[in-house]
Image 1 (cartoon, rainbow, N blue to C red):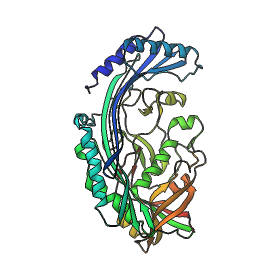
Image 2: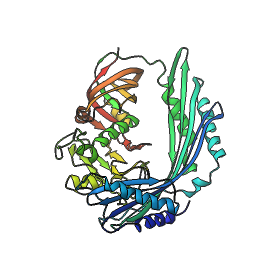
Image 3: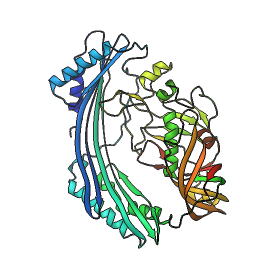
Length: 450
């Protein structure tokens, strides 16, 4: 892959096709992705895909049109601009419509690109997944099998140019290795998972992923349903990150504008425990989705969302900022060149506390350590905040981890969970999602089991 200059050249060519009175935004993207799944030492699935294309937005007289194509061919580019222009003529007038304009914020210099990833042979990627499977199977005699071991990587580049003066590009690489083992003891079989992440191939740690995968499966052997009751719940970082991700979705200004956020009209209010502080920061290179430039070409930046429990605001794209009388926070996201941008979080992190996970568990007399949840996204109402999710984990008795538990349900609301946080761990953990996690202690949660 190049240094991105050729993508900017394509974007420049598109901007040059704008007519008088038009705003034009050109989003140009290119990616190369590999996915491998192995089972029983053999390749079960293999996909190597390259993608490239452009998305063009044209705004004229408050009417927006969009079109895209999967080619850099000059004729295809000209046709895409013509289609976007034609679509704009049928658009509904919108006073907030318009492409981004430079805001004076310069992108942070982030080291997110590892060109060597493109040179790793597919056979080596397969071999690493096979090695992980072998390591998991050898971790303990009770590991009865491995459902699969998966390898995935991506090299992604994009460029944005506009008639308003934006001209920026970015590129990132990433890879991951994941194992899904099965532990068995008689008729009892329990699943687990473990993973390792990196920007480059040589950053992947097979031993760490294998150990975590085996441990998660083994510690659930003998799990039973707990009795129903109200308990202190301790979320491990994996689960906390999913919860933070849900909160982050409701803090996207698109959801507020559309009436789908429980935090609408609550800026300045106490919406969580004073122990809870959340910051969206795509400039943190530890984040899986870190990037110096958003999908409208503006520099990303830290955005305070919740400070000491008080709601500070939302993440904005250009459109939501104009719609709500503020400005973009450099938080435009899109699902590739085939879609228009919206507002969204990429890298939300809770501010960690002072105590480690072990110390937090030691402070719980009667509770449950939740290490996995199921159906969390489908079990949450983003407007009311009502939440119900299946879970599994370990009982906590007298400050010590005890028997494994499964098939129980946690029922509450996002609002109550946030307000009932009683401790935040020091173990900030970045995961392959749009949020980081910490060990989080929540008091008096309804747990439904047997």
